[in-house]
Image 1: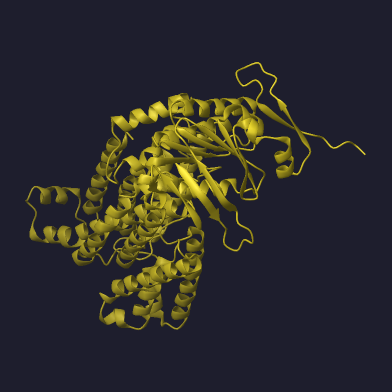
Image 2 (image 1 turned 180 degrees about the horizontal axis):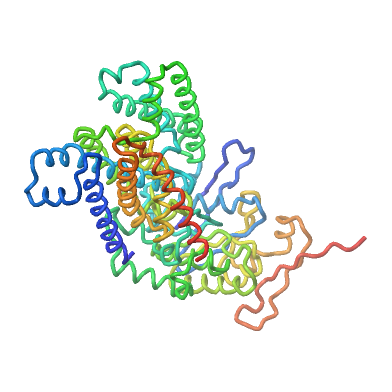
Length: 264
Length: 331
């Protein structure tokens, strides 16, 4: 999946939310998009997923334009886990994950053994199989988030986009979630994750894209992207970047430490 | 999902029993034994004519109206993502009532009784078109369901004011028959109106049922539904048009029968969950059975006079629903 020179200005907004940003989501790679609030991360995800149409530039999937795809074909190519969702009508985890099969079935077609196998497999990969018959509202935030990712996996799309999947989760759930993304990437998916967690992004992602007021400020491997200069400029806060002390294979990954202001 | 066929078969049995019950009892004093003789082909002509020309069309009409209201209530709840939605929430009943009351008050209904359902249907269509036009104008390019519900409620309120205006100008006799119509009653049933209603219900119900899985997606929010592959705008427009048409037809045939469309889908939800593949057909069948029973009660309690069916659905439906709610809350 390739996004080229994407630009988008929201109606009635003065400045563009996304300005000439290009990126690619490749199979077997995990790309993390980071940047401050309002930098255009979610808008970028909406452009890449077809939810918004870019005013300039375009998105292609294997050389097919995203805008040429119908709704079903698009869902077969790109799975998205948006920031949050709610429903007035409670459903079980299995029902929720089963919704991922929508694009695979015609309106009168009943889900078959193949569909059910995909759903069970997606729940197993996201470690929510044991909650399959529980209602979503009975799960913890981290379990719920994994159920939403399982639904996206049930789409069997080669590209997975996630918008702040770790927001509001505790340390263990955040670690588990990034490990899950890393596994999915290992299984050949192209994964893009929007996150505010610079330190986990630096340790888990193959590449980073640092957005600042709609523009790509820095990109590349974590240690090329997360420099003190660019981060201080983007976040407008004094900070230091130190290597991850280890142990582990991610020893040395750049970890951002924002500095405290001294008491007067 | 694996329970779906069994549960629907169970409801279908309940519907058959409700039809038998409804046909077995009435003001004329014919009872279950007569129905049995009729089914065996041994009934006399009077019995045959009462069953075939009076009770059966009425039972079928009650079944169709109840089913339509159950199905449409469920559809509007899914479309508007609002558990309080019911078939009349978007002003269709208000439009129908204006049409019907106009026919009654102008005296046309006295000379041409068949004009009453036509007037109601025309009014319902007018309301439906008006609500849609306002909603689309206010949210160009896409149908915002929050705008749709506002526009429906406001236009419904306007129609209610028009009804009061018409009634305040009416004589006592028209006033009475207009009010009686608005409370909902199925006493005008004949094969012609029943057949017309069925003709509209079949395509409408099929259209809505084909959207069952899309409704499941929509209940998670429009953005999620879009990402999962639903054609959100098309689904919403189809649901609105199909359900409004069915409500228009049901109201034209049976007046404004309340509570069925609100209570029935929730009863099914509480019992069997929120998967629309089961919920939609089950709401249709449960609505059918519920209105058949309510109408039977309406015909019997003050026989040979009748209660308006809408009064029975409210009086019987609300305690039933409260009981369900309390049971669900304890679980």
